[in-house]
Amino acid sequence: MKNNSKNYVIAISLVLLTFVMRLVPHLANFTPLFTIGIFSAVFFKNRLYSILLPIIAMLISDIFLGFYTEVWAIYLSMLVAQWISFDLAKS
Image 1 (tube, rainbow, N blue to C red):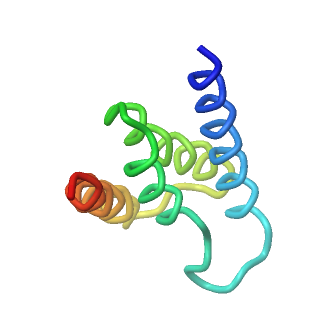
Image 2 (cartoon, rainbow, N blue to C red; image 1 turned 90 degrees about the vertical axis):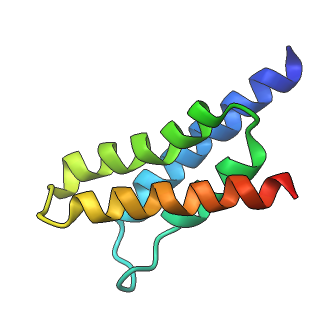
């Protein structure tokens, strides 16, 4: 049970970090979003949990930043990166 609560703390921290990093001024395309997506695919055992983590973080920040026409491509590329990470984590 202790390990499970540790995973929740890590997951919530990653969502908050992603949210904050997308809101503060930064270089173009320099946010930890894909890193968190890849990390969650390797770190968390539950695939659904690790897929939803960066997607929820993106949705929350996109609500504040505004949605745009290419949003589907960003979400799709995140899913592809996670899929590749799942395969790499197996080996």
